[in-house]
Image 1 (tube, rainbow, N blue to C red):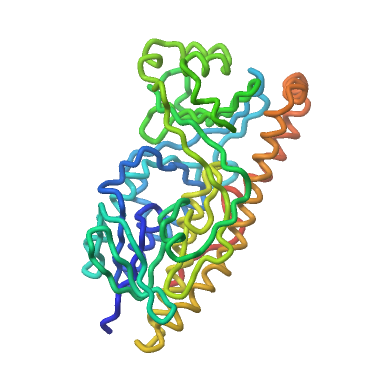
Image 2: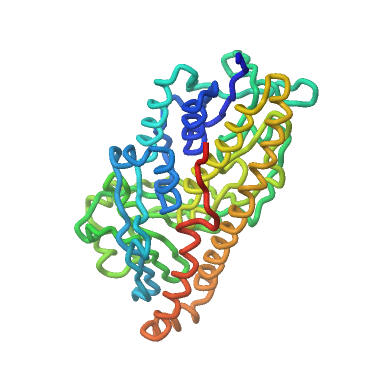
Length: 404
């Protein structure tokens, strides 16, 4: 049947994998990506077992092995210079948390899709408007003037989704947005090759440190206001918030010469769209539910979204005659949200709990000092509480299976 294509806007983890899955199953697909390449300054790297399992179901596990990657060896919490507890990967699972170079992974996924005759990839163009007909989205107009008539438009264009705005769908923000300042610094032997992911809390400073997929030391510094803009010496600021062994690294000439005066700042908005779809248009991934960076859930939930959407859309496509496709598609959009929404809200709740625990330490010097002093006693209890929460953050709260 000669049907209009599905237009997927955004070639991040959701859009790229969804486009491939649909095209592999015979649906005509157009993926529209605003960037001319995937080398955006910041892309999340963390694949939890839930995300690794999703890629395995898609037949993409081999791609993870072929692009730069790095496993996390353990998780450690250091408060006021003292290690409170550490948990080794893979925490009872066969798959440890794995950091993957997202740009190279996305390129590999899109390259695989390009080999299919029913797949088209458009890069360097944005969607300027949505076309509506009989109160249903029926196409989109691109920045180059091209108009694409569609069976469906799927917004996979991130937390600042233009498709969400153009379609009139809204976002409920869970809390005031906060900022994370990111640094990529030279590698060092001071960080074990096992690659622990370490969270440091000292005074008002909260930051994480680990070795990225490409072998650089990555630091994420959490900030609640604009004070970070007035910092003139980040090397010294990081050193003052670190234990002596790490402070020495931040003060090395190599780091001092590498560290930027004005680092990358990622503004984190967390929330969910009460309604993921309108007739002819669907939101997925961060466009529908921007996730907190806590425990790297964004890419993992995005991949699971792609699997569930594939199940419903392919079944609708195969079961419908031309004249009934619109009705069946629009029903499928509601089913996708009904299926995915509970897990998203549960994961966001777990992230919020972890953020709240961290905020208590951040705001109370007395609590930090108490935990530091009683580390041998309270460390075990805190470790078990933390591990219990991670089970769902690592594996998801529901079973997601690719069934078509």
